[in-house]
Length: 225
Image 1 (cartoon, helix red, strand yellow):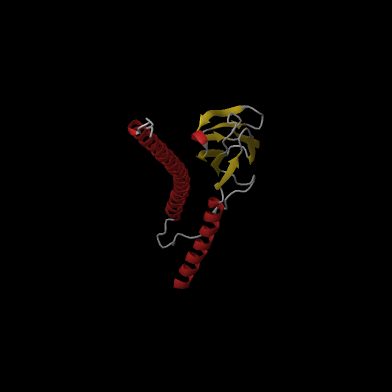
Image 2 (cartoon, one colour):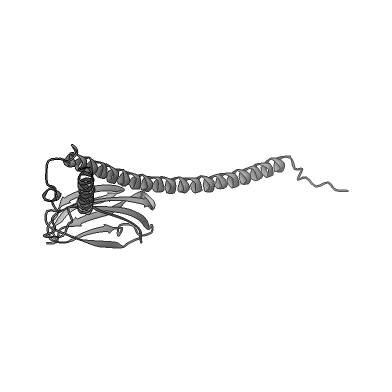
């Protein structure tokens, strides 16, 4: 009896692992950082399936003004979202079959290039006809050592979702840190430049003042012998 129980437990664990692999493959995340030259517009495409979910989050990490134009279009060409000169944004859309296009536009800037980070989160992207295998049909009998596999799977899926959210937040925090660092370095360079400029002006003014004061005490009269 103990051997049978052990085999049932081992089999249930293996089937549960197969179920977890199928469930975990439904969510896809990707992120990318690129440089957008001044006066340019860059577009990207993402193929999506019907009844899936696409979330796009972007941030301008570096560049004058820390702003960019953003647009998201459906496979039919309809503009779903449009942002004008924003430093960051988050957009979520329920998708249909086709290629979604999202563009970053820096054509309003004639001088400054922008460094842009964006992240894509795609849910419910399993293949058509691919259903998670029901592990219940492989389990026979009522002696399951009081294991509530449904509760275990719910807990595992909850932990997986929270871990995915934690990873997303960490990625965003890294992007915020990179942007703040770029801003601090830019301010540091500006402070140094203006400090040197003020120092040179002060030295020049001091020299002019010394020259003017000495000229007041110079005796310009010539004596004849």
